[in-house]
Amino acid sequence: MAVWFVSGVVMLFVGYPKLLPAERLGALPPLTAVSCCVPVDQALQWADKPDAIRSIRLAAEDGRPYYRLQQADGRYLVVDARTGDARPPITQHDAVSAALWFAGHAAQAPALQTAAARTQAKSLGAVWLDVVQEDRWTHSGALNAHRPLHRIDVNDPAHTRVYVSSSTGEVVMAASRSERMWNYVGAWLHWLYMFRNQPSDPVWTWLVIALSGVGVVTAVSGTLVGLWRWRFSRPYKSGSRSPYRDGWMRWHHLAGLIFAGITCTWIFSGLMSMNPLGVFNPHTARPNLQAWQGGTPGLTRLPLQAPQALAMLAQRGFDARQLEWRVLNGQPYLLARDGNNRTRLILREHSHYVVRDQWPQTSLSVAAPKLMNASIVSMQSITRYDTYYFHRAPASMYGASERRLPILRIKFDDPDATWVYIDPYTGEMEQSLSRAQRTGRWLFNFLHSWDLAPFLKAWVLRDVVLILLSVGGLVLSATGIWIGYLRLRRKLA
Image (cartoon, rainbow, N blue to C red; front, side, top):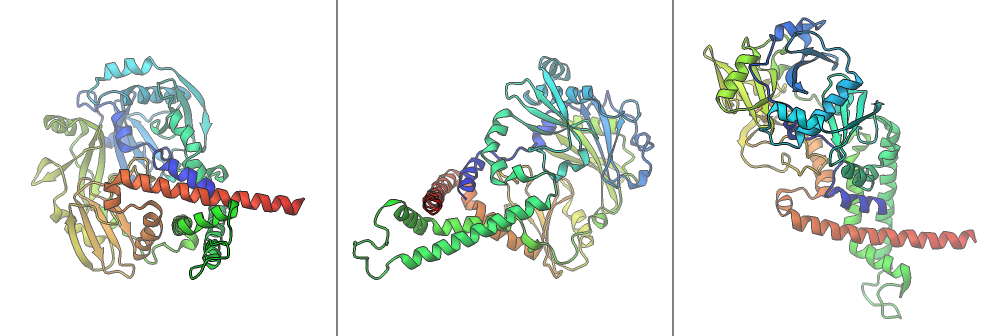
């Protein structure tokens, strides 16, 4: 528990390594109509089942554009967008080139020209380390489709370690040396990742659940004993209301009474974070995303080709770094992202192509009933974060989640009373929560992180209070450790 208090304070400022969307997109070179691209149909010819392709993405690595086609089984097929040829397996040279480009370009302004970025990238050195299935910084299940990963150390000022997908050749994770060092006493220590060997590790899961459970019993029983020994009505003969007049036992007793509430709260909410026995799992069907989409981009696509789409975006001053072919309620569209993860949509309306900031709410409303086999209780476009949909700082474990506003919130009358949040900027389901998941939000997120909007807004005061309470919990834990050591030493002697 002492370890959890110390590492929890570190996690307020340095989170577990993650590649934020703006970091990944900002390091990509701009897509230009001049240098791009063969038709999507030509790229799809390399797929065994083109109709089953569930996502199509166009982006460039090291200045060269590629189509990335995700197949029904989750595997990727990469096609050179200039030649239409399938990309050979990712080599060590390819991985180093991608890492150098990322490290050299990510530190530059978004307007940096491609030639300048290439010069900057080549001026950096890099050391290819190895190919790993997983290491201490790549436990995320989101990386499963990219494993194994090329691991490269770049000689940039931050000494960044870069991970490159063996499936697509793109950078999927990056962590500076300081970030890695702080994580040894932060998230890696807090989550006991030294015992985790794979993305889904039942041994690690039950180890954390068991330790948290023991911690809950220890904290609650210690609190009850501390209250029982405290004289509320009249003091002991010494004049103190605690039976321990001096020494470590007195410090432990007083610290326990002062910080018992927060200690029990944090250890219990830490246990709830592991969702023991699936208590927060939805009990009925989840939202049907296939029905929401009404088709796959492998089968249903805009006939507009990439060069024309990029030219339309450029005319409106939008510097696209990535294009995605998508479908919503059977209507195909293009989603573009720039280096800051801002988005634009290209839709077909009345036989014309138009660039939009958002989907019209009428289109989303028509598609919404297909998400669940239940009636809609309410549908509202909200312009402020609520208690279930909100943005967290990058250091948070949720820092990489896109949380744009406005957002369309839909409440269904299914047995789970499901809430769904639809992002009108992308047409994606950003979040869905059953009644049990909303309960878990309070028993874990709120109790553990104090993440209500007023607390997050007053983040300086929140951090100060959390640090002071953590110091109190550390004093309680450390005195308990020392008392236990002294008692064991006597018994062993």
